[in-house]
Image (cartoon, rainbow, N blue to C red; front, side):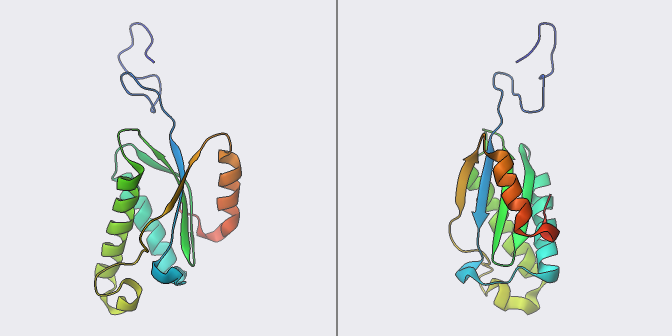
Length: 146
């Protein structure tokens, strides 16, 4: 992983004794699969997810799309993070931020500040990454998260 005489990792996905490329396809939905992710809310959710991912060391968005009734996202997550903790943070923080910004829209987040349904779908992305990325891109061309 390191060349003789070099002190820095050879690429950004290297740790001192590990080289990794862990990409996950993740999907989650709003409570009751309500179609609430449209217009300004969709753009806002995309911005929030980008901002939250930027704050997490070792996590990056590969591709993403906010559809009216679900979120599709491909994340590259370092092995030191669990997928469940990353998804939990994204879902929890985005619901709280949206609730605080738009208290007039309580029907969106509910009194308890929950926007998202419990659980999520996740699969690892390997050789099929290009197929999954095309699928996400075609979901709705104008609603990419990047």
